Image 1: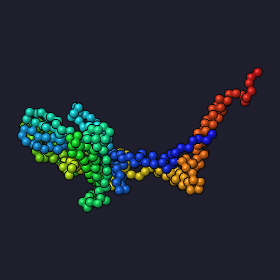
Image 2: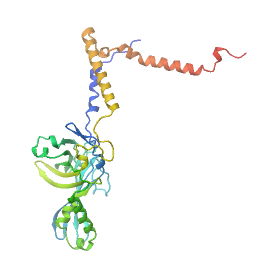
Image 3: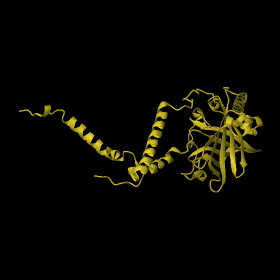
Image 4: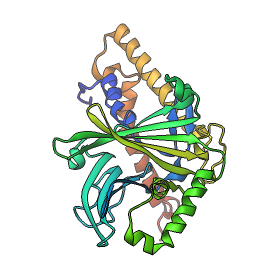
Length: 334
């Protein structure tokens, strides 16, 4: 019995696979730009820097910008005072009254994340992109070593508001800890031990500067640079000094960061390309020689159609062999 021909040819079948191979994804373990791969997975997890504005007695505005380059931020606060689902970068503004000791969250800014499915945060697309600094088209970038990450998707207000964007610049820092970082932490320790000073006054310039950078847990420093309006967008700029942004890093203490694909990955890629080349060339040959159409274009299409029946027959033989194992060679007892 001859199976019915399908109108779907091999070329159409290959085209249907393209969306799965071109899907955009932020892989912090393999941040690749211009032939160089960086493993930033050790920097995963939420990291927060604080920017203080409007410091007028008796209050100031404290905006906490939180970023996670490896996975969406998890909700930790009460409803209406936390980042929407799918957020990778988010800002939460709090009005701090240091005289009455009152804090009030009045603004949640979804800056970057995949909000296209949930509709939250403005419903925008994440669209992450990496840029290698040493080979950038910008002269000032080529003097640096590292990688830049741009993310979007948010808007504020979420409905018909300004589009938001986050730019995180990962800079190579081969030191375990910078002098600026040590100074920042010493200021924070002094601030925690001086409760009386916090109750009666605002923040000093040194305290503000100290809060605008944070330890990433890997000997590096995440620092707030700016949050300004650029054209029709509001852009948050962060600087992340870390040894994981160095191009000659071989081992970052976690997973392999060599950037080289393994043997099995190359094997699968080569195998897929070989099969694709065989199908395309064979289909072209059948089309030109025999004017074949549909599945008849596929090389050895008759054999491929018989595979289900061959497999079914093989399974039947295996089952009959197993079931007939205790029959004493075909003779029954008398």
